[in-house]
Image (tube, rainbow, N blue to C red; front, side, top):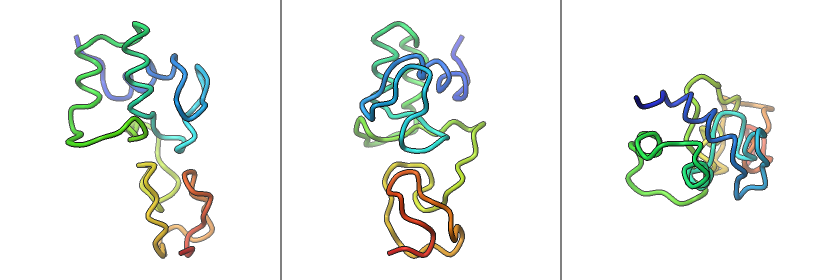
Length: 110
């Protein structure tokens, strides 16, 4: 039985991450996601089955280890980057004053 995306994210957090997040800590990309590299580490360490790993990367056409899988049950407080870890640093009127977890910028920054 394949886990839900939320359960996959929770299981993935048992492994460490390339961003420096240790086991049981959130990735530095923001509160709502885990890096794909962490998914791979969780799979290698037996925290995820092959089917769960496949379900986690299912919607990604192209990705790197720093691509982020968002946990659907954890809201992202910043629309700067949508929690993707790829902050465009564009003018953002929908999150004024909110610090982006990826780049440290705030809404309205360029």
